[in-house]
Length: 315
Image 1 (tube, rainbow, N blue to C red):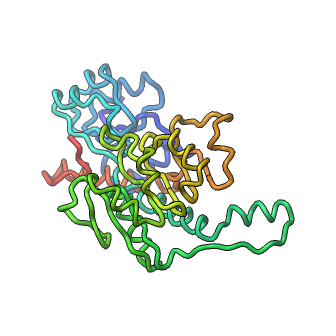
Image 2 (image 1 turned 90 degrees about the vertical axis):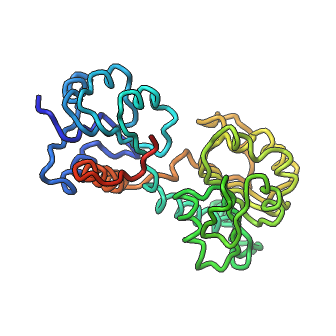
């Protein structure tokens, strides 16, 4: 076995093979040795000499074998599942996939908002039933949309909303940092944002502070016509409170790519609402996921070579 510069652990995402990741890495780094661990045995052997390892996770046994490891490039945006303390003690830098999902998830959000405003779900039902019956709809133009979370995805959503002529409110932990929205508020002011919103987009991480952020009190504050789009994590919404709000016509509609629990059981009441659209956590699907990820990881490999700054570093 060789000692690769970059080792790609076994991984598949969105139906894409790790081979596509390797091909993209080789295009970016034609002079580097890019290896793919095909089996657990190959991974254990190849990791001994690799400077950079990329994958979903790395267990303590693998980490112990990684004598030359300088960087672990996580293929997810979230890194809470990683053995961060062990990586820190080993002197290994950690990066994530932040920014990879900006284009694809923001397109999903725009599609969801337009679908709800124009009532495309009703149009689809009527077409299926061969019913020609006019119905009302709304416009995004002139509406107020709150985006909770001003990370790469939240900012991409706001960028794509700009041509629609909407007013935007951003909610983030550090409002003093500002953002691309017309107004930026802190989480302690979220009810002020909710009461003025025609649509609320959740694009924040799941933390102790955001778990059940949208609860009974939040749904009471929201307008009865307001729509909710969640592309963050299911646990940011109190599911039971959402069901109560929908049953009581306390909000307009919900477009959910994530749920709590997940997968959503077949007998869960959320499936039965005409004004709820559910997709199976696939807003992040993209045929170029590994290409975007390779851009980040290859750049960080070059930064290690040249002593530059590592992008997306989380530890």
